Length: 209
Image (cartoon, rainbow, N blue to C red; front, side):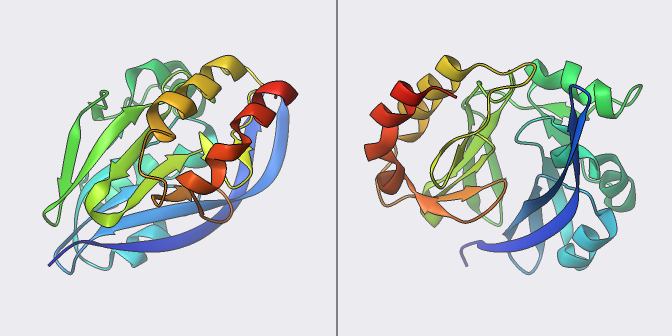
């Protein structure tokens, strides 16, 4: 049986560069009745553990290390025994939120994570942060983009550790090359598709971010 996708929304705060904003985050679970993988343990470890529901949690994958995407990760790991995985280029950001606590493993471009017989390929997509990644699950027809790509354009690049030309290159080379019908499941807000976002690329570039 193919893995299924489950969705949880949690609320909390995003803090960076001295600013604090109230946010709602998408937490994604991929798995079956036996095992599951969590993408972005945001804000509420107890709620995420409840969604896991006693299944074996194979990994807690961080699409990037902004605090609102990782703040519940160590607690969820302690509750479940699952490893926390992060791209090493985001370690400096991680340490702003969890000083003295390291992730359990590293994500690398092209790495394949398997849960419930379904493969998710790690795509390194820097720009929103240096170690930002997306997870492409072709069997499920979807890509989990964290804060790299949203409905309506790229993730924000106006704060520390971010760069607009870099995120545009990441989106163009790593995401818009996916099949146009691929569903984009984002870190905040509603889903979109690769084909739905591709026509706006020239406008993003002209507008900057």
